[in-house]
Length: 303
Length: 88
Image 1 (cartoon, each protein chain N blue to C red):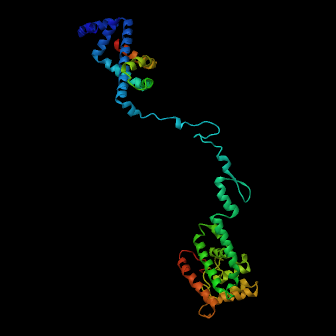
Image 2 (cartoon, one colour; image 1 turned 45 degrees about the horizontal axis):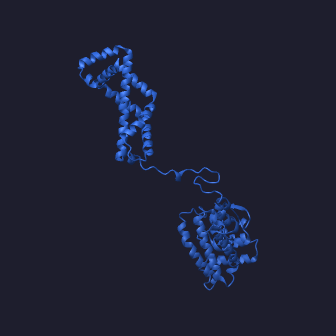
Image 3 (cartoon, rainbow over the protein chains, first blue to last red; image 1 turned 90 degrees about the vertical axis):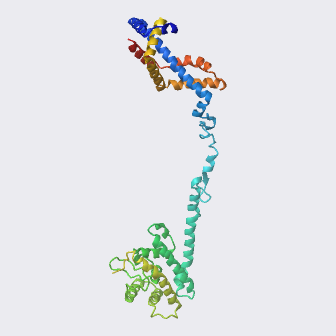
């Protein structure tokens, strides 16, 4: 058939073609025939392409290895999680009862709970030991300056001094740190400059006045937190303050105040007094860092 | 009738329009996802035969009838319409 057609010249073909196209039915037929022909071509092309890919290994390279789906299927059963692990094992563990208060606590919160409940753990044991230490120290620090056991007292005051300084550095960040013994507490208050003598007990006042100048500023109504020898205030001011503040308390406390005053004026006090020398030591110790800080901290007592 | 059809076909081929139509159909079939479906069919057949020695002839005999049914009507109609308007 093809050979016959190929014998037509282009002109013959054209005339024939127009002849055929006059008839609508044959034209429709021709269209269908051509479509089928074209479609076969395209389908063969696709199949050739696939076959070629298959034989040369291109298909496998392009599409990669087929993954095993079995291992990754989501398990959908009530007792298991999506990985197929049993969930029953976990539930009894997740609630522990606290040995101290018998409350059920989730396992993830158990350690923090114990810390709170029993006073275990880092922070609370630190707090506890500090509390114990300050409690045992307090009697010695009160009586220390008058007893012959003054090395201890000196150490303890210096120690609290150190802590006070630490608070001063930290008190903006960690106000919770002020949980300390009575000593630390009031020192930190006086450092904040907001403490007044009204809120303190006689012992606390005594203790405080042994360490700082303590004169109340006229402007800020705050205590001077510098050493007992501070140049801002005169001996008279200090003595008057101690008299007025310690007046209602026992006469013993007044003698305490006097010793503190003696300590505050080293040239006058005799070096034979071990008490005053030790407190002088303490003052020197304290005065140096205080001077450095004076620039940064707005001191409340510059009248 | 077949002579008439071949005459029309022959003329289309000579004028180069057949190639144009073929390219159009190919593009349409790729666009509508027919080619991917046919590829899936082929892959199934390869799997059935365990991948060894799938000849081209087996592919053609197994795939062509199903592939023809998969051609969307819209594509087929569009092609027919275009060919007809070209012939008239």
